[in-house]
Length: 504
Image (tube, rainbow, N blue to C red; front, side, top):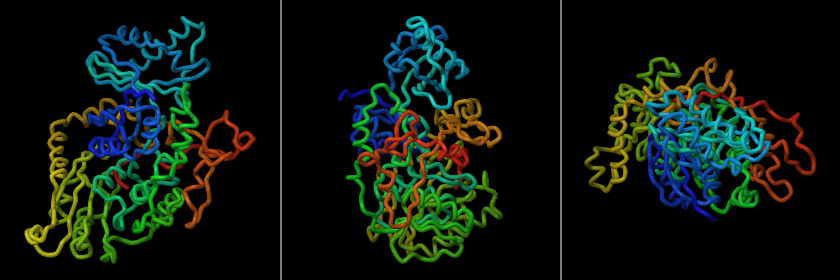
């Protein structure tokens, strides 16, 4: 198959992790950029990148690079492309714009120029024009402008890939699924020990940990990808990728999620069950102040409150308690903590062995590792303990890159209209003022039928087999088992909140 250029977008701080995932997947010419990783691959690689990557939020396929120094340049360059190759008669399209330019100061203006060029080309050639669909277009386009350099791409993902599909309910300020997966992969954990999240919220970290431990593709829960509506979509190829479970593995340890709030516990249990992972994940009510030394070798990954979105009585005392529990009840293991405030980290009272800068939404946070051992660090090193590998030292060096690019938060405020289109402008809005409309996702599709599964059931109920292939996937024009899909079963969009905030 022919290879072509592809771009995987992600959150700042996760570029290295995403690059490793792509390399492992077999991508070629992997190059790390800012909140993105470029690579080359064929159609199968594009399908697999959408379906299998844990830390990508969008996969773009560039179709044109050009210089645009004015609105007229933009219009003429876009009109040069033969759009009949990408947008068939009767199909709809939409355009997302991401703009960082002195000439083009408004991304919506760029969007309109691109749309005008495409529509005018069809009108000139055929006398008719394709329709624009914001909610559910057949073809999604992405235009990225950096000064006078423009890249026009096909968006092969559609909805952001962090919306896995397993989340049934949310607690306040749920952790973004892609960030959760990136945090776990940063630790190097792949299921070799037990995994503990003592403040699990809606259960995002435990679910993502189970997917990683079992090597289950996160795309298995998705109802659709944008590339499925492309003219050259290869159904047989994607069926093969979707049904291939040969790389999945057994997980011989266990994952535990705890929370002091019973509502959060019930929500997390619901999400774990929806993902078919109840055999691997146990959720229970427990305050971390009552945490005791686990019997098995374990790793803790946690995202405690920052005092930003979630108000916690005596926040500093909470972090002090975290440090005491780790020091006295987690010896011989390692803990990773994501937080925002330096004064909170100080209250932990332990020396971190590594600090990795990551952005949680608009907040510049740090992900810190604490190695818990008896005695002094000098003794630990003398006995062969490794505090920090050379690769980890390089990761920490990225912190200086963050410090130099302080325009990030200013960009967030100036480009809120791009909140969904680009990581640089990923921000949080209240439900009253969000960009997706009244507290619901902009793309309010019907949800795939839910499956009731007990602990012994397998995620296979999500798989397509024989004549039932992907019967749960939404497509108004597709027949399901010889009959039309009963729309009375549809559920009105996701019930979880669409504001993916910085705390879980």
